[in-house]
Length: 318
Image: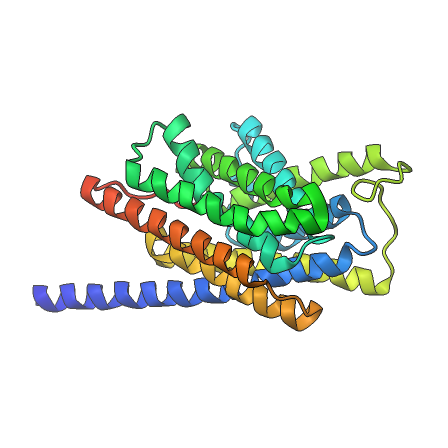
């Protein structure tokens, strides 16, 4: 009977992991739609306004979920400073990336942005004193070289704006480090709600001070019907992808799901070609391939190190 019970447990765990993998695949395949809608919207809407709407809709969608789960009254404000910092970092992440989309192709911007796991590895070794061997440092260096292969021709085409995905990746990496400090005793949905509230507040402040400035980033405008649909598309797809990601990480280990994130580059290329007719050239494809390979190696190597040390990875906040 004991063996049968163990077999049933293993089957259940296997089903959970398979379900988590499926949810993660769906999440990363639809995630570029956020950027497609943002790129369509930014033709007439400033990036700070797009970012603000994204956070407002996140709060609108998540607030009922938190209420239904009965954790609304459990929201803790003991770590208000860290929650505010997380919100500010997310604003920098999204604002930098959405601004990039006005001039760059979606696939190029996402490819450069995917140096984030590499940056996170380096920051973890500096601030969290995580042991990083020469193999992962080498992989990080190779990954940055791949990013340069994508950035260099992009800079010739659009200028310094091609560096904004690096800014976005860096701020997200810092966000994840702060999340590790907060996530130990916090409900994931509550953390999402906190991030949405603080993100909306910071964006609102930027738009308030940017009124009448004429800035293409901070001066708010009244969107027309089509632009409103694009803004709604940003918020809805971001929320759906985020919810799918939360449940994927609950069903399967983070180390199992992490490599699937690179499917986003594939779907971004497909959507970018379908909507805008954009395709990376040969040099950019080489850079993208190097970024993916180095990122996957960093993830694999980290999994091996954690396995040998019996350290459970901390789930990132989606």
